[in-house]
Length: 270
Ligand code: GLP
Image (cartoon, rainbow, N blue to C red):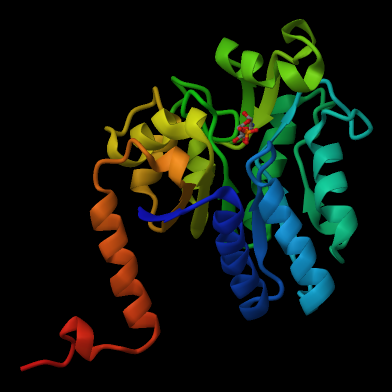
């Protein structure tokens, strides 16, 4: 995993938006995997700014969201469809028909999840998947113990997740118990992942994900098997990483490579 540590979440989100913008400019009909929660909010604000001020064009972009609460329709203020419409889709020039989110009101879950996977395949797969992380190290709603080969399916939320999200619902008893979520196997098939984590409450999850063993108990750790993950953290979330110096060295090499300063890296030497 490439690890980029920025001083704060605003700087990290601007950096994340650069990766999104670079892709959208290079491949206007790209497929983005979207996440919800507080983590990607600044990234979405920056994407909106890039659209308004720099004309970043989303008209051919397709999106697939990671997950949705079971039982909540698009009009429910805590549904992820509502969140996405409010915080991103209504503020950029994306075609609403190109945006996909599992339907929390589906009754035949198996068929719905199979169809969701098929739609991702038909779109050519996800080019760039945006990811946050739960405090227990889950990605999407793949709670601890989820199969690392799992596909889109119904999942029971862990008590930790229910506790974390109770603030949005006004009490733990109001949080849905089930969600539809892309599986770890689905996420691992995306071409590139942007893994974002901000704040001291994410430090353990970040350490376990980046430097811990691969385990179904920390489903984000499966990202170590992914071909191209960029971890973007603020100082607070990165504070338990022990190989920080090395990650900084890698970024220096990366920047010299991007600037074509090959000689300084010993490329083309005797
Ligand atoms: C939920 C979502 C995840 C998200 C996590 C963290 O569990 N399903 O996709 O990463 O919350 O949320 P936040 O970014 O608000 O900390």
